[in-house]
Length: 438
Image (cartoon, rainbow, N blue to C red; front, side, top):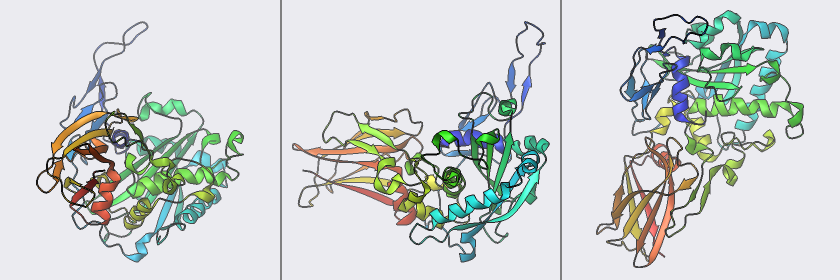
């Protein structure tokens, strides 16, 4: 789940919004051409329809409507930030649902699932002030034949736990489907476009407009590649305990993404200043900083004894404990206005300083490794200020801001996380970057 646009694509499939494709006329006998794919609708506003699969991918800032085949605008979290959460809702139950064929041949799957949850709680408890914890609500099995229904979003309501209809949140259901012939059902999802044999996806479902219920679906290629089997011997030396590797997936997907950490800003930023202009801002690598190295969102690996969510990530997990807000809403919880203030070494505002804004990481990651795209050239006013374009996260996830005046320079990176912290945690609707010329 490394890209928000990819999440939108798979969300369409899982919720049953994968618009039907009909075959065109003509047969497909020996040597004949395959019938053309006809998508209905063939196009959508604020989104795109894949002509080969008919899957709808909404533009950044838009999500698929429920029900329907239209992309609707996503509203920002309210100015006051996260709502208060009843203390009891920090302790969340999880439903484990396993297909019957695997459950019947692996009688220990429930014990292994409980072990994973125990390890998840150990990692959460390393975060200062954490109140979030998990317990197993119940174990369930479902017929193998029901997997297609699950893929289309036709999931029985009794699979879900929630926190009562007085809440805006919901519990978590983790679905598992283990099969030997994985490729035989690939077309149920994204045709040949799946990025890896392990398949996970996170989905928020609105139920009667009253709450959200969160589900993670896991699909593994055979029992040797599942959450309930031993780690591959080739990597056992690095992961002496198989729970380390298996817990990582639940922490990253069900905990991290499930509680609002979905944008690239929370993990795996990696780019370098290639503008050739002063000052050189150097390399930005989020995953290798001390506070993020052991964060389960970075994918940095290592034994679970070193894992701990970075401070802001841990804060979001705690504040969004009952899934009040979707990953999209958290992304858009940012100040409405961004200003750059340029001052001298005495803190005095500089009028007429040049401010240049460069693209460091765009939302589609085409500028993933190098910052070199000039976006804006501005001039500070009498207050030493200039307002930069706020197109986070629709277009950009990170930018480089530079200022110059009379042979002196200053600059810094601006990351989407900085804006989220300012708005969600500090309650700021205006964000000011102060650059001191040297």
